[in-house]
Length: 83
Image (cartoon, rainbow, N blue to C red):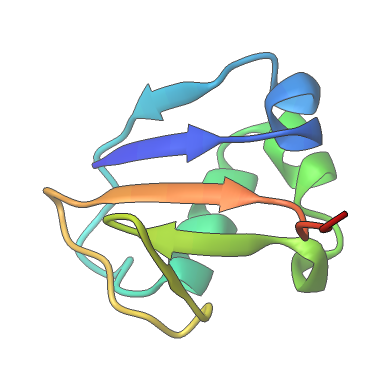
């Protein structure tokens, strides 16, 4: 699974993307965020307020209860603003 990070998440994690192999019990975006946070102190701090984290799976914006699979690309980003 490829995970992409944007905006201040990229800055706080000091990386724009990574390839991960979460365990089988990681089935949703929420599970993935929890798993990433549990395995990386910087991610734990960056994801402290999960309500601020938006997600897309395979370029489609989704909610945190969306399913993820091993071959997916998951993008995590803060709220977007227009203007």
